[in-house]
Image (cartoon, rainbow, N blue to C red; front, side, top):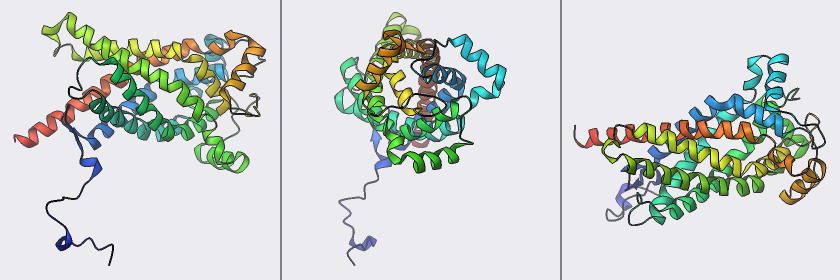
Amino acid sequence: MAADASPKFRDPEFPEFHPLDLKISHDGLKFWQFMIAGSIAGLVEHTAMFPVDTLKTLMQARPCAAPTFTLRQALRSVLTHEGPIGLYRGITAMSLGAGPAHAVYFSVYELCKEFFSNPNPNSNNSAAHAVSGVFATVASDAVFTPMDVVKQRLQLRNSPYSGVVDCVKRVFREEGFRAFYASYRTTVLMNAPFTAVHFSTYEATKRALMGFSPESANEERLIFHVTAGAAAGALAAVVTTPLDVVKTQLQCQGVCGCDRYTSSSTGDVIRTIVSKNGYAGLMRGWRPRMLFHAPAAAICWSTYEASKTFFQELNTSKKHP
């Protein structure tokens, strides 16, 4: 048979290739270990900061013609009408999307960093880190965008959906499969520069901090990751807020009074927002977005690096029992 994979027909000089066994030389971890480390980091990050993300969504998803909705007003509204549990609407959808998306995100980043920074992936090559980040976000957004649509619709006050399954079924039936990816182009346009700024700032800040105190780099490693991650997250969040507003508008259109757009064009949505709210409308939610991404990035990077350290020690112990 053509598909016979019996061992007697295999050439020993060409061993079977398993992508998940691929080892990335600069950190000595296998591909699947990067995926698990990234998945853990993403889940910890998004779970810890989810209430802030809910407030950001509420501020950005309001109709373009609606009055300004401040962070304090958004928080008061949720607590008054739903209590603290209202801050966690949609967390199941986030969990289903964030784990796989971050697994893809960090594993692609590490692979690209090794390729573009050859021969020294740990060099201070900001351009290589930025390009690697862009490749990583394009891949991970393809995984996360559908669940992000579900998450944001569930986060809206008086959401018409009873849960993740109900939302997926109704969106698919009423709007079609394309609705899950209506914001994908905008998401990539937002996350490509976000990730480029994020990764390059993170790597540069981390190395600068280690340069100030090289003798204590090992002891203060966690502090370096937290500080560099927070700085990277805050800067990238503010720079890309306008595109995040467009993404939220596209994902929540037609739900709970949100504006519906005849086109998923980023430019058309921007023109609509500016015509109704001025350029200030494109900065809706920048405070909670920055409050989310600064600590979220610190949590994500420190968790990711801690997970990598765990796997590195595990691999070493297997080599030298």
